[in-house]
Length: 117
Length: 132
Image 1: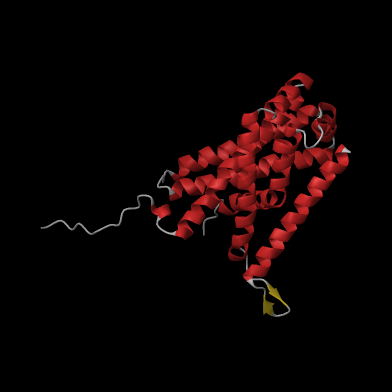
Image 2: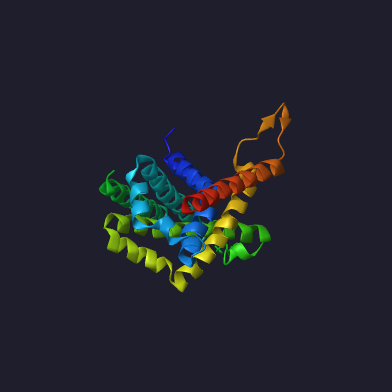
């Protein structure tokens, strides 16, 4: 029996979907609505504060986990939906979608490492 | 020899044929906005690494009415994602037994939604606590 790479992508999809389902709404509300509109003080997302957050290993872990898993979740779903929409170039859509998630994850990891700690 | 031309139902706009398909497609489409939000955060991370001026520019961009409008749509999409995620969870996971009895699908959905509500409340409480 040949091995499939599907379980790897499915696990990342599941982990990202679970994370998005659990904390996504609150996260979007805080970073995209409450702080920009002043419902929460802008100081919460100040440069010093976020730099300290991203400088700590636990902060790096959270930030990387959220960005990377959200990307892998979306990539897998989009790849499958393209197939359902009648685009059957399976290899091309998979390379494009998973490549997008991979590049995004690498950039996130690089940015977090560059911040140091 | 006559050529057989069997009838084949068109797949054109198949996702509008049945409410189940519509819900399926709506669920799948949430992933586009999950990707958009991940990219917004990714840009923020990169700008943070580039220094204070770059980061403040990103923060300023988040304050634009366009950004707030987009994030409102993203928020609604994430709420729908949470709801649909736990609605299909009992169908995607192995059957759960508790005390020799099969756990009803609805109970799994409700437990998942309750966990999400708790996680979001904790996150909001942390944000409010850190701000004050």
